[in-house]
Structures are given as structure tokens and as C-alpha cells.
Image 1: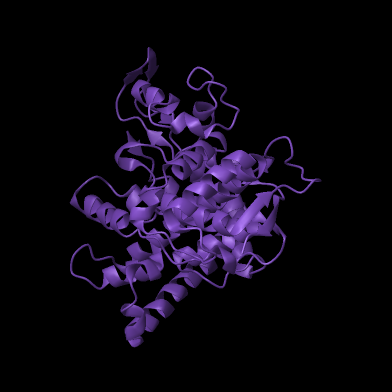
Image 2: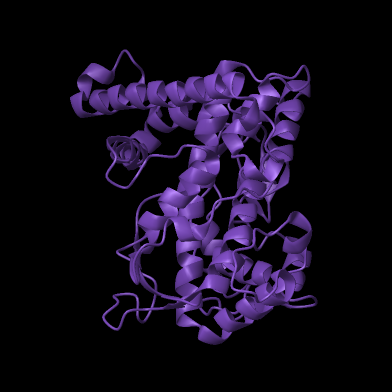
Length: 389
């Protein structure tokens, strides 16, 4: 099945995250080289201290996570009130308009005059992409003029810095257009969805104190229980399997992306006795899969033990793709490693320093309340943060 690109390239989402981005490149040596580059440079822990974004006893979790994930990518300075963050959210909201999802040809430049409000969003997108290019150019100048930045250890560099350094090399070199497009892709994968995932993880930890304490004990066992901040290494991350179980269960229960990019069927296909004709568009319902009682026991409950060795998740994996927060196969989300690394670094650092709980008047007391089309964002999620040192 091919990704639908011809009609998508003029849409809001297509212009922002498709372009020459490696997610949407045709199969071939260039696609493999670009994907190899992305995977290699998206697995390094970055020195982004949770304490830098926590400044009160009760915080708006999603707002804080948005700022933290932007910092990890290398696009600092976008606070929640920034015109660029507002512009980005307006663009993403517009990209979810179901009319233009169903009829993407309506966004052809020759037809935009029929939809003045849509034409305005495309102008906003022009401004946003120009700003992203400005950030890339500015950081490149800093790297060229500042040897200290170049000599930093890998885990002290943000993703944009690593990509710019790689673009100067002979192998897997990125053009400016590819660099901008990949950064935009990581903006979605490493900013929006990861901010949502971290928000839900904090919610699940706040509402399940025994799970929270178990994650904290694991972090202290690996990183030490001294009252000092410690940035986990890749080796130490691997020594915290229970933290990984909590992350996986959150991504199963609290889906951050509703579905995958549509695919076009290239030939008549029999799928489980259902005929899907050539040319049909198909999508994967991630939430429906993750909450399906035919696949998961008590699917609406939070139970990290599902992902323990020999647990339910292993049985589900043998039956098929029952856990697909990043899709699967060669076309799975390029932000997978980057997003999981962010989460696996942030959570142990956070819990060593803070205890989490829900305010008594939280609207999320009984269940997580979310909104959105395409991406599910927690609504006004406040978490109490009690410092431990």
C-alpha cells in the first residue's frame, strides 16, 4: 500500500509534515539512508532538566510538557503564550478539519480563493515555516562560530544541533529542504504527541500512587538516592524495565494519535475475508485496537503489568499488532525512538525529585478528559508537585 501523497501535498498537514520528509519518501536507497540517519540521531538522551519547567506546587501539565519537549528538540523560547505556539496550534487544529480530510483536493492553490479562512491558515503556515527556517539558520550560525557548542558531548546536544552537525558530513547529508521537513516532522512527533504522552503518564502516576512509588524506587536503585539531579545514560535507561512498562501501558490506554496517515491500496486485497479494492483508502484505528476487549483483558483499566515479561502483551504480540501507538513496519513513526527516549529520561528524573497527586477538585478524578481530532489532548490537567529535595 502506498501513502497518499499527490492530493495531500497541498493540504495544511501535507505542507507542514509531508514535503520531502522521510516518512513520505518513496522506497529506495535515499529513503533508507534518510531513515537510518533519523533513527541514529533520535535515540540520544538530551540534558533537559524537568526542574527547569516546574515552578509551582500545582502545574498545568500539558503546558509544561509542551515547553519541555520543545527544549529537547532545540526550539527553545516558545513559551505557552508565544505567538508561534499559538500559530502552530491554530495550524494543527485547521489540519484536523474533517471536510479537507475527506476532500483534500479543495486545498489546491487554485481553489483556495473559495475558502478565505483556509487561505489565511495557509498564510499562517507560510509564516511558521519561515520562522522554523530562521531558527535553523540561526543555530547553524551559532555552531559555525562557536566551537564550544560543537565540542559538547552528544547527550548535551538537542536534536536540531545533532541534525545540523550531520548535515555538514559527507554521508547521509541533509539538504536544507529535507532538514526543515524533518524538523517539522519531529515537531509533531517529538513535541505534540510526546507532550500529550508525558501528560498522561503523569496523570496515571498521580492516580496510581503504588505504581508511582515503584517507578521511583526503580529510578533510585539505578541512579542512586542522593538528593542531586542525575541524567540517565542509555545504559541506565535499559536497567529500568518497569518504567518502560508504565510508558507502554499509558500509550496503550491513553492514545495520543487517533490513527495513521491514510494509505492507498495498490491491488485488490483480501483482509480477513473482507475484500478491499484497489484504490481504496485505508486507515488504522489505534484507539479501537488498544481498547478492544477481544484483544486486551479489561482494556479500560491501567495495568503496567500487562507488559511484564511473559505477560499479556507478549501473547497479544504473537496474535498480531495489538499495540501500535507508532504504527508498525518500515513506515512506523520516525519519532518513535526520540519520543520514547524523552519519556524514559524524563520520568525517572521527575519522580526522584517530585511526588505527584491530583488536586481534590480535578475534573480528571474519575478518568482522563481529553479533546481533539487526530490527536487527543488532556483538558486542563493540573497536577500537584511536592518537592522531595
